[in-house]
Image (cartoon, rainbow, N blue to C red; front, side, top):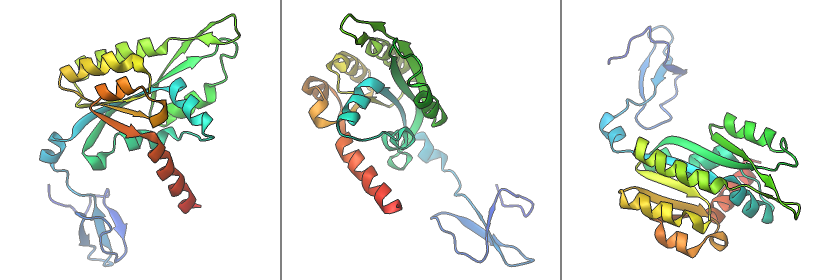
Length: 219
């Protein structure tokens, strides 16, 4: 539609040229201030964007990250794995969290933060083991949900953040249905069988290096 003077959704930049390619401006007749609006959405481009969903094995990822003395910014990670600049349209992001039965509320704050960052968190209470650890097969539920989501939502790309070989059969099944499946993990912590089954591999080592450099430049 055409621009109307009363349309108050357009941002104002006093005399500035548009800062983003494709922005359209019209100067105010009263003060000469440029009114700038976002680019018009090209429906043809949207139609070819690849629908992307992300599934994270929280225990697997956090074990790898802790061993390296790193922290996960889940908001940034979600954007990185489903970048709109790369022609991807994020559908949903799921994170599967195993809960220690000896300390059920230890991860409450982290889970809340992930939910605030847009993740759909699915937690499961584990069962204690005689050796003091606990067992929690969230990967089974995660595998079932990946298949179910692929059948219902029909995404173009599924990103699985885990190096667990148990997901190899799931990856193969999705690829047989024409879905691109990418595995995101650290190279030394991913099963070669899983990597060979996947359509592509996202090296989290490089992601954390880039994220670290970005934080240093911000400081």
